Image 1 (tube, rainbow, N blue to C red):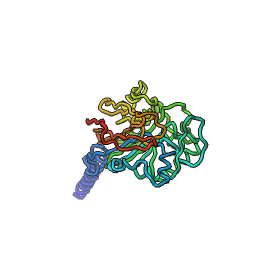
Image 2 (cartoon, rainbow, N blue to C red):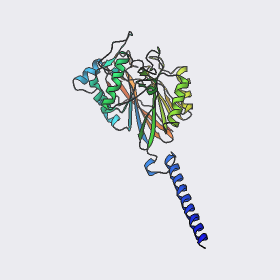
Image 3 (cartoon, rainbow, N blue to C red):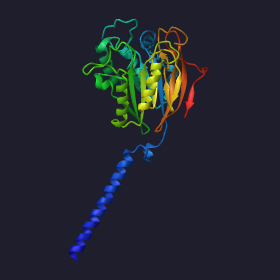
Image 4 (cartoon, helix red, strand yellow):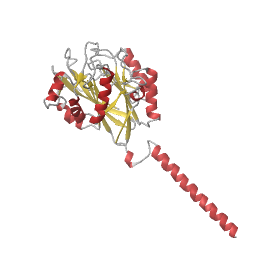
Length: 333
């Protein structure tokens, strides 16, 4: 009897341990599953804003030096978003020498508190981040960190430049990636040198997949610096690359560099916004270059569910103004 009682006691202990193990496995699976019915991970929508090219030297920089704010009219729009991103189309530094090219842009570090007032993230993969060399670019990375501004598409080395920036909002893990495709390819980050992320199809596809598999991103947004200046429609390369990135797992592809707005295309239920145009930009050549979009995306765990535009009308000093009479674009899934 004692042996039987002992055996029953061991069996009960084993069954209890097995039950706890089952509960632990279920609890882990629920924590790991993006579709678990966890109140902390409910399907709250996240609003992401993306503004186009920002250059903060010359008139815009002088306005900031006087205590002004070139983004002031858009403050209420930015304030209503959960995640705010823009392309920083100039280096912010005090060092370096101007590159041998027609246009070089360098802004004073005093502009960063103004950017931080309105933005959470700046994309760096563009053809002006290297205008004053690698030393100035590295200085900018440190200044951005000190200012509390996150960045993507650039880094102290090649690995960092291609690392996604993962931002969590309302339980959603959103991976941001940024790439430059505008030649010449002379300011790409190297294994031991600071610079920007260059757009190569296979590498970008691998980065998107890595963002989901390694960084556990629920959504992936790719920001591309591509196309040709002043062209009002996307070219074949932009269209091909957008399809490649969306098929690889990106939830949206957003673009800039043409300095004008280009069309919005929905591909397999996902948006490709080929160019949002300028935002804070001097040296504009015509009325098309003096119009830009602040793009608003609605994100849920199922992807991008809606978008709309907010038109910016840019004056001759490069300062954007809200245009309440503009005909806006919108889409809803």
